Image (tube, rainbow, N blue to C red):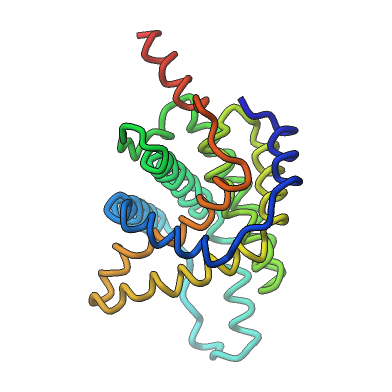
Amino acid sequence: MNTLNTLLQKINNAKPLDFGDIINNSIDLFKKVWLKGFLIILFVIIAAMILNLIFGLIGLATNPFDINKGFDLESISDFYSQNVIYSIPQTILVSTLTLAFVAAFYRICKQIVSGETSNDDYFYFFKREYFTKVFMLGIIYTLIATVAQLLLFIPYLYVFVPLSYFAIIFAFNPELSEKEIVKASFALGNKKWLITFGAILVTGIIAMLGILGCVVGLLFTMSIIYLPVFLIYKEVIGFKADSEIDQIGIRDDLDY
């Protein structure tokens, strides 16, 4: 079982990583998990669309521009700040569901990389023993992102990288508290900020090639942007021989 001190020690002692290796390995891994990644992206989009529809029906969806005010810089700024705040409830739910799905995707990737029997449980972290923590992380994720967005581009650009580690720190260390997961995510994000940002940017450009498939192709390529984070975590922290999440699953089975 990893403790916060163990994670922080591994992060502080992390060796330099090769950017080219991260990109090449992301592409190689994507070739093995693209279909599973497609399903994750599909689940996230469907969930977001359903939530947007529900919030629209109850009158809590974000508002469009007020064309009577024109499209000057002030009106755009007002629209941006108002809608960032106005959409917080919906963003919390979308963030929660996305974290749960992406954490499950990382668990599947770990099984494939480790040569384990693949158990494609895309709803693994929707179980009651995990979902409360995922929901709290969704709230924290949204609050941090919202404050950063209100401070405009540069702060959000900075927190984007640590926030990207929420799902994977949680996926392989579910025994940690929400506060500890956030602390470990920011520690790893800060330690490997530049290589993480660069790798996500490059894989994002690669993912955009899906547009060549009549836009729908993006659904098949977009999951590659999650893989640099997975590989960086693998190199810096590594995977426990007997993951805590698997042990919890075994205990649950025995309870039944």
